[in-house]
Length: 116
Length: 113
Image 1 (cartoon, rainbow over the protein chains, first blue to last red):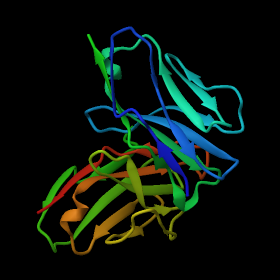
Image 2 (cartoon, each protein chain N blue to C red):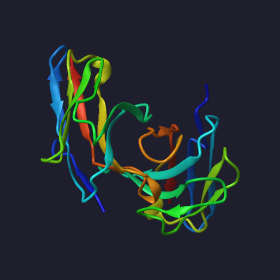
Image 3 (cartoon, rainbow over the protein chains, first blue to last red):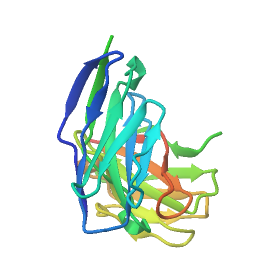
C-alpha cells in the first residue's frame, strides 16, 4: 500500500506572492501518477495538475507547477502570483499504474489561505 | 455539462436506518468510485467499479454495499447506518484506469444521529 503525507496543515500568504505546498509519498511501485486537487469551500474536487512518474519534465499549468523528485518521492506544488480565488484545501494524491481497486490515495490536505 | 451528479446533497439519518446514495455520470466513463471524506482527512476509497457488473472493495468498505446498475450509474448503500458513517461522500468517474484524472461529483453530506 502507498501513503501520501502533506506536512503543512495550513499556510497563509499575501496575494500575488508565490507559495509552495509540500507532498511526499511512499510506494514500492515504479510506475504511477501523482495529482494535486483543489477543494474550495464549495466542496468541489477540482484537478489542478497531474504528473506521470515516467516523465522527468515537471508538469506546468498556467500559474501552477510541480517539482517532482522521484528518487526523494517528493511532489510539491508551486502557485505563482497567488490570487484570492486560490484559497482552498489542496490535496496531493497518488495512483499506481493500472489504477484498479486502489483508486486514488490522498494526503490529509493543506489549507491554503490567500490574504488580500 | 453535468459531469458527475450525486443525489441527495444533504441527508440526516437515525442510527439503524438504511439509505442509498445515487451517482450518475454522463461522460461515458468506464470506471466509477465512491470515497468518503472525514474532518482532517483526505478522501478514502470505499468501493470501485471498473465496468458495469464489476465492483471491488477499497480501503474502507465495511458497512457499505454498492451496485453498478449500468455504465452511467453507481450507487452506494448503507444498510444500517451508524454514527461512524457520518461523513461527506464523493462519487467520481474516470475514462479508464491509470493516468486519466478522476472527475468528482459535488458530494453528499450525510449525518447519522
